[in-house]
Amino acid sequence: MAVNKDTKVQIDSNIQHPTARHIGRAGIACIYHESLDNSIKVCKYDDYKRYIWIEVTLGKEKLYIVACYIPHKDSNYYSRFGLDCDDPFTELCHDILSFEKLGKVLIMGDFNARVGNFQNVETFEENVVEHCLLRDSEDCVMSDYGKLLIHMLNCTNLIILNGTKAFPSTNVLTCLPSSGGGSVVDYALMLACDLSLVNVFKVGSLSPDSDHKPLYLELAIPHFTNRCHGVKDEKRCIIRPCYEKAKMYANEVENHLLKFSLSNDVKENWQHLKDIILKVGYTLRGMLVGIRCLVSM
Image (cartoon, rainbow, N blue to C red; front, side, top):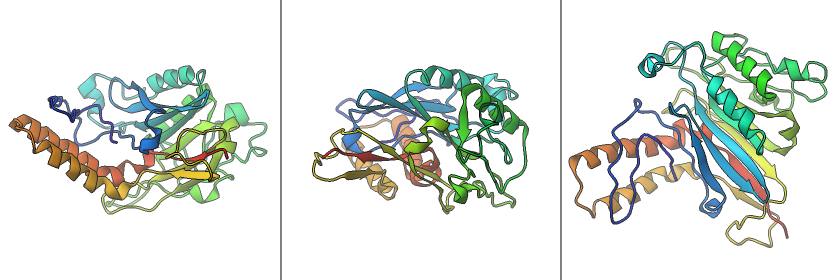
């Protein structure tokens, strides 16, 4: 399932006209296994389409996953919406502080911020070594947005997973544009006290259609017994999005739409949505999380 705020098509006997608002060809998506349908919901959209909050119900607990894209400082995005390009994280920071009171928080995405080897030093300056949170990154540059991101981490107590001693292989560059050079602008953020939930965190390889490497994070959630295809006699059930089937899903939806008499506007907007679906497997993987569910015997 792809969730995109800019375009909406309701697949039933009444086709809902997609909205006409688009921000370039970008979008934020959430893909999850159908067995989690009753456990996952989008609980908040950013008013300016920079991120979405996804609530995952884990028994009596909640996990809040944020898929985010913060436009770079020189983008015309800020002038278009009348936003301050020198203040990109304030709304996200306020949301984090609110959702931290409700459950665990995990943030993944492209922040267009370079933080060098810095970490959340205010919270962990005395015991950062003990927690294996010191960072060693291939990108040693600190940008203006990087300073603001570190300030947000200090306000929310979140830490950066990339390049920490706990995950040393994740210190690599995440953005490698065709024009040359490279940087780390894609991060996974969470509270240090939740670090024990992380089974796997790694940086993937570049795909042909993106200059960003995907981030993959696998969580071990204890006591999560939520109906994984009715599996009761297996210790583990791995739930991951199948990115390779994006084209098949898009074609199935298109075949369904062709059964109706559609206006040219609907056809045009469907094509925009289809393009997003086909790119999800490559360009949006870094915003998604594979959840390892521990199913009780």
